[in-house]
Image (cartoon, rainbow, N blue to C red; front, side, top):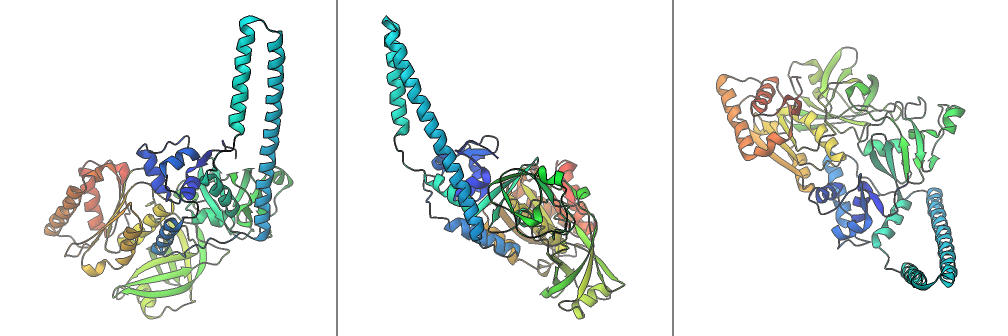
Length: 502
């Protein structure tokens, strides 16, 4: 992928300045930084962040770590690429430097020849033309001398070259999603971690579904794969993303899931990694899929879990698609429900739980730049958590608001998670509210009380009508909230509710 040497993608510019991409986009929206077709000029970046220091990435790394912990994902280490990868990237930079030096030498030769020709023409010219040509030659010599003079080295240029050695930047066409490849991670691993839903199947090199075409840049095969690319595909630049990493910055052509219709139905035998009681009536079930059978899903969707031959339950996924091997569920204690009783009383680590799905259309509208408002009633927090984590993995620049409304205080069963988000992210805002009655069973009096609670939210946040609203929880409370926001003037295209009775 070729751009002007002084132009940077937003992702790379954010890394260079040591800030979050959200902060960068905020400056662009405020007019403090100009952007051109998704690129920023390195000189403008220096002007927007005059205090940036080459070595100072402390705050950026701290925020990344806090954000990762708030997700419940592993904190990514900045792994050093292998010696072979470092050598390849340094060699690529050396090649680029040699090309630039050769071009500079050629331009210098052309300028010298131009000066000689001007001098020859000037000697043969007469009167005013001779003087004009003399002025032109003097101007040219002055400009060349100025251009050849050594200028202070821009620290962001130095850092950009360093980052290109440490991490390759990948742009996916035609969607223009982008992500970084750290260390020796594969293209597929890096994309999924960044929230880019690329097509894939086994992730082990057997099915070929993660095939992509390299438009520009250099890749390196990291492991053998059984899937056989045809000679035509190889000549066209196709590779398997699960088995290749980026040596240089890349531009690839690959399909990105645009909606639930692009996610296939899957059947996966997962293992119980842990079961943790998070409240008297709620357990956190952590399932882990095999490395070769990761669950593809969109944030907000649900799956069917099966224990043995007969115990089943449909549960929303409570984790981010960016960590597709580790799937989390919030399981309610429902006495007399065979699945619930088994999970709370008998299910142990390493037992097999079959996963079927995913299903559901309660998913994030990724292209919107409007503020996001999430209403979670009781255990409706599970799919809402998945949506919020996905929005965070995308570094959404718009503000994110979460209102967790519980029947009782104990129904807000994981308060530390949204508090951690609020502490880590400037654009995240959280409020916990208690209704004081069972949100699953609304009488006329309770409906009036819930209506008043929603009016209070709208009164404190009148800008809510300019955003997108996502609602999850018991059907009765969710339907009332959905109608409330429609009556408040939001179009139906900006109010999203899961119509499953959670």
